[in-house]
Image (cartoon, rainbow, N blue to C red; front, side, top):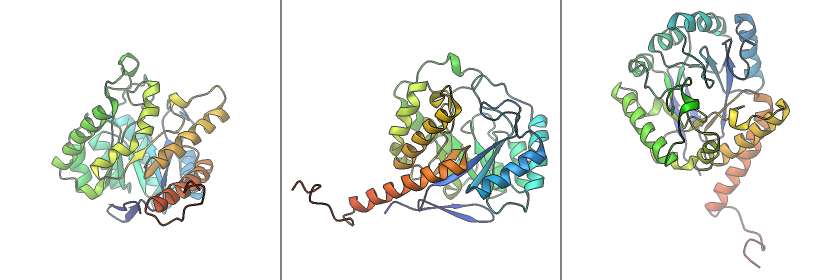
Length: 296
């Protein structure tokens, strides 16, 4: 059987490895690439968060600053203005944990004060070294993403040489920054950062070699949903492309998959989980082989 991890948050413990968890994306920004402006109103954002839980989300991830390619950074005050009214409304209305997508320690602190339980840092703790101390103070979960450069510079970056080696080196440094701030191993999840400064063709390589990240002995999250390397002319085709990427992520070892369309991806993940579990059992010799498999 695959290893189980116990992700310890302040108010609960989440078991990772029994099945793949779905993190529902809720952007409260005016400019996110997929749903910018759609949920910038707190009432609509509240309704969407409740809907995500009803459709099967295990975590809701709220972002108040876009990380789409070419986007510019927003001030701490503006990020808080977008974020805090939504979190306040959601407190005690969701049974699943709230994650906040931010790299700013002051934003993280306010979010955790108002009931968030996870901080999802897209930058790998590069832009605010105080963030781990806030995570430690509130016994929060921490998702450490790999990001190369910044969104406003991604288009100018050359391809990464020796892709997975580079990602693992950078993630190792980011984990060190977290633990230096006294974040414990049981609080950490890692994410290779699809699209975050990588060239289009390199994202498929990351998914294919996701298993290399098992060397860290930490749970793995990944966010393929509607990324530019999957983008098609028709939205329906983009959803099918996302479904293919989500299934591949699950089969290659993801513990958490970050998606927009929870209802559709729940079905995809359920099938992929069944296949992965069957493969694990067969590798352990618990599933009898057919005559064809024995070469007879």
